[in-house]
Length: 395
Ligand SMILES: NC(=O)c1ccc[n+]([C@@H]2O[C@H](COP(=O)([O-])OP(=O)(O)OC[C@H]3O[C@@H](n4cnc5c(N)ncnc54)[C@H](O)[C@@H]3O)[C@@H](O)[C@H]2O)c1
View 1: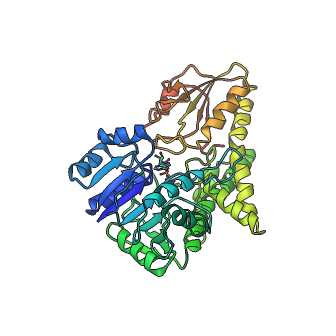
View 2: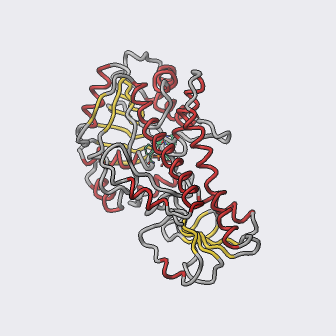
View 3: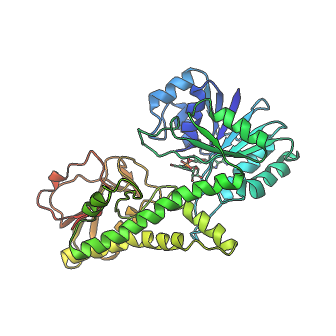
């Protein structure tokens, strides 16, 4: 069966690869010509897919990629995996999804199944995507199938992969839900149907809002613990001995990545629109955005001011052991340090080069080192006697 996956990023490429391995004939489409050229040369742009894995599915003849937004009339399923970011006003921006839906609509034929995987507000599939598909294709919603299935991929998580992470699906009609379930069940162990598109859309937003709220809470608690001279990690370890009703979250310089700092704002906006604001999300967002400034203050306290102080920031990606710098809170940390007059260098051998600067070696010769993102490969003993500010919890 021929399928097409729109968007070959962190979500779309692993989906395309999993489907190709399950013997679907997959066309991966991405408007980013450089990304498609990389894929065509056998280089994977995402860490979860190795070059050899990509090479072997290309060799099998089950995967092709293209920067043209056209798929053939024989295509049975189209999955949309494009970004749903925040705009410059820190509000949801659906323009990329709308553009992708237009492209799909132009190629849409009766009987095809369109599945949205991008994270969106409740009502977006039904009220935004379906009307665009109808308008662009000239056929009505009862002639094609539409489903929503949120992605739960956790980049570089070796334990929970696309195969063993349960997948939610919901359909505009029961037939669409059933067809989507049938498709994913070919390469995912557990696929659960939700009662409506809106339930599945909101479930994804709940999952990510739950993380943002709890991480922001633990970050506030970490500030309190530091003030009274205890390590929040010792507190979390002690509380974790409770076998029920507690789940540990850990401190940091803030949340990053394309999902956790972004998706909850989609829920917050939808909630405001219906007059039922989710204040926890708004507060968590505020706390999250304030964490880098808090650590700039801690650094300044440790050094008695930051003017002309040499500071090394260690780990700049948004989470350990990945090279992804999207929405990384370390960017605000570095700019805050610079604004306070510090001379800032950073080290991250996974990211290597970023914002026109390159990673420097870990070593002595700095007034202060700040551990922002603790990758497993790091050897902090190379810092010698350099004072260390650990954003992951310290007394
Ligand atoms: N990254 C994650 O871990 C993750 C996890 C769960 C859900 N999501 C959600 O999945 C969606 C995609 O995220 P991602 O991380 O894969 O983004 P990404 O930026 O890695 O990839 C998206 C790709 O879509 C391409 N694109 C944009 N417009 C297009 C168009 N009109 N036609 C074809 N390609 C187009 C971009 O060039 C890009 O390569 C988002 O809604 C995100 O919230 C992401």
